[in-house]
Image 1 (cartoon, rainbow, N blue to C red):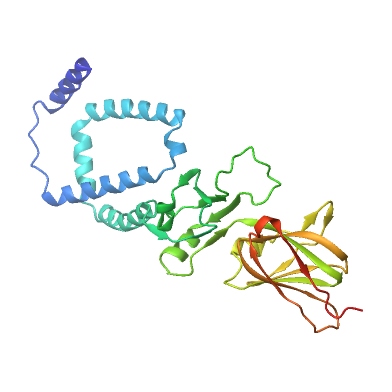
Image 2: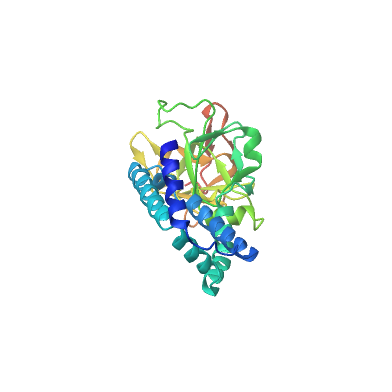
Length: 303
């Protein structure tokens, strides 16, 4: 390495020999050069790790450094003059000023400075953020970057080899950039990530619908988009219609059928409906139910 450095120094001496040393650059030039270097550094930092870790990119960068270093040493004075001349041009200064705030915003968006306060139900459920486990203390004030966030909420002690057909089971959520801004900076209602449990319902007699209403708050947005149908012993109902606080199952006049409904953690009021009947008998249930207890709903307007 020392021999290479000596050779480079010798090339620089040969290039400078016999030339009048140029005047030192004005101090203002240092500011523009520093701003340019800062912009380039932030731009490189924003590149995806998959690009920077590529072996091809690494090999190409080594070749470029070697070739560029050789050319720079051979034409040291020319490069210096061109660089100093470029730093004095108005378009160069305007470009650096325009790029700096944009790159600063992009840089800040990659930092974990956006704090949200998710509601995880039950409280002892495990939270996995982008493949990393999050402790109970950290998730109370969850710091995120402005990137797409992949979230998994799973039962405490759940293992990958557990039966995926059993409930509760892990649920997956996604936060987009707009979601992070919505919850962190706009001060909106925080996200709710509840587990889903089986709730066993028996509708006595013949009814048209089974209605489930939340007593506290709305269903989480993920469940409203994709509510889970009841399923038991090969008998499946259509996917229920879900709104903010209400879930409606079409029961098709099935008589005395017991089905497990898939409901998120919470408190509910359940009742049945029959066409042309205003009578309603309600039952309150808490999810998860203790020992999978069965809730029986009386038939309104029995024949």
